Length: 420
Image (cartoon, rainbow, N blue to C red; front, top):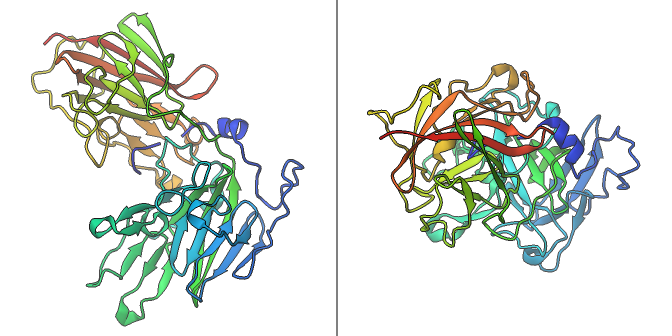
């Protein structure tokens, strides 16, 4: 996974904004009549516990869909329309966000995930959508030579299990696998892949692709409960998201990092929240928090020289001096240091489809309840040696990710100075 990962399933059920799309759910809160009416190129049908869609785009035109009502729509200006969530044109799929659309409010985002090759994705076992900020919900982006082509989520992510072919066609392309041209270039859905779409109305719809025949694409869909969509006025959270208290072994910070769109910047030396004018070049901050992501003022995230040295299973209290052999890591383009180091000890239980595992400072249970619930984050037993913007050394450890009420993204960290 990217800069990863979720809150408790119970919190999702209580805090979610979506009614359940399962056909057997007779809840009066959802007044939609499903399956939806579809349209000229779209047909929706009902199955036991989910719906199925078959979309035909043989004429080469984009087919636009409102996933919430399961209806084909015909926007006059798709790039600026709030009528549609997802659109199909053969194997190509675009979403109403990023380079593919700029609706007046929000944008559609997609989380792409896979399990091991050859393993069928446990799609029906999905019980809740992961909150944005714990996983990377993507939008369509520009890519290719000089950024002239679209890098669409559905045909780019998740990463390929198989690549090949001189012309770049054979292999995996997001939701599908294409065989070699000598074998007919057959398109077949990847069975170990699933997607969660966050629609414009902030509903969460999970998809698994099942067939592609005669330019007609088939997939199953069902709605999942999910967290409310967060909003923010900018990249930096307003003051009041950090509390400090003394501890027996140093100081503790309680950080409200719930907003998926805003970083909470911290000056470690003064144990307080700060507001950098230009985060990439401003030396007033050491660390920044956003959900489970933690970035530092060093490497790709900032111009200062903040770095970390990870010490798995170290004794926090006994550590009083900076280790002579400290090897400092900084944020890189392909990963934040705090969610990369130390490397994973647990890389996923096969019984959970490989969805659970370690991600730097934390362990994530994913969709599998292996003791503390689904979508649960637990700090790993690791002590970090931190070099701050002034070159001073600190020891730091994560104590928790939830407050006493069970609310997620309420981080607690403990830290103390180290002798050089």
